[in-house]
Image (cartoon, rainbow, N blue to C red; front, side):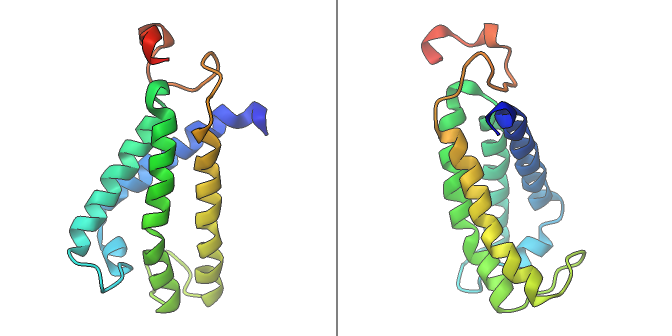
Length: 143
């Protein structure tokens, strides 16, 4: 698994960036699953989308990748109430099968995402770490 760690970093980063972008392109499904107790659901969807994009990019910037991983963990925890709301209230979304099993299975997947991000909270091999920035452009003091 460790030999694929950097490939999995890129997969997580790209996936979370794509999901973040969908918060802006099609926010309605995310608004629909927001717990009704929370104010400003659309604004919270945009905010979570922004932090998903930021966290995904951050995973690929070595000087901030550990902080980005911690931020994604916090984000995955923060959005969990929406997943619970969707499961408890059987909220149907387009393109997602309307089955209680789908809702129930979806909940533990949040733990998988948290564990996946947790993997990147540890220092990485700077020579092998996936990066959007060429390693030669990263100042030594930031490594």
